Length: 413
Image (cartoon, rainbow, N blue to C red):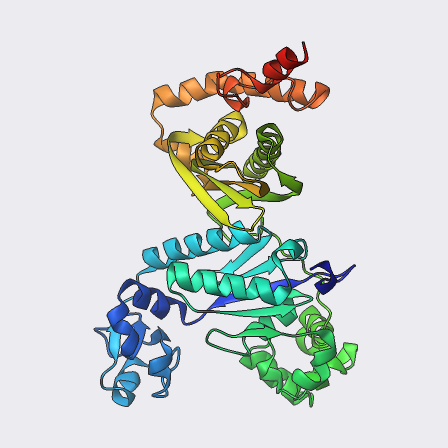
């Protein structure tokens, strides 16, 4: 499938959950699916406005930010619900974790949308195959409709996902820009608000083509550096990467890797899991977070993927403890078949300082005593090799509970 992917460029997906708050409520209560539904800030106040509404309600002319009194007048049978932000955040986290188990280079940009770089996921199929897999999986697992844009960069992927809703999949290439984007009015361009559109209009810039061909000096005087960025994007240029460690607060830190070949040897798979655990630990340190839940992802040679997790008794900072839990999860749930991809994720991460305030003094002191040992172990492994010193739990055992390394030595003798 590598022929579907560029040699030098990227393939980016933008996944956007359709009418997210309303869709989550309908997934929780399917009886709402055949009713016009709106989520409003305060259903008891006439001055409230619609946060969102389902597509059935939109058939009555309802839209986000419409005053509630007007919505009820247009649609007398409207069902109005107050937002349940806790539910929406929890569902969002599960949604992104699921998608990341398929394609790990994922960056959430809001509670209901994310970018995914699928350039290295070619073994799963063409970009369209992957988009269909994600869309179908999200619908089956969460009962949520999503629209997906496929493009060589973030701007075009976002633009493409807006073209077909709900449940659309749209491919937008750079060569499509003159016919698909340039004729549209400026206000239809992602990144241009009403005020910016008015400023551009005052300069005679009315369409996206006008932005693409506008004078740099005029754009800079009108919108500052953003004017230059808009011109670049109107011409299909956008070098922003998909960054899993972005500022948006993601409540998990994970990493996965496609193995060089299908693997059956437990020792080799365990070493790959070790590298993933080390990577996750480093990212947790950079973000100064800890976790109390660890997830393992296993993808087999037939591309069947499973995720399994374990809740821990206390918070951990990664390291050998993260590795130990990940390996135990793998041993419990691996069916013995060839493995193509493995992943390790620290779930529900929280700020370290906040977490330690919740720990009792005894637990904190016990962890503090171990910290120098972790540093010494890490320094030795960095100097002489990553497996020079390991905990017993990180070793792979055969059926007689002997380390594989010792077993191999006995076989050679």
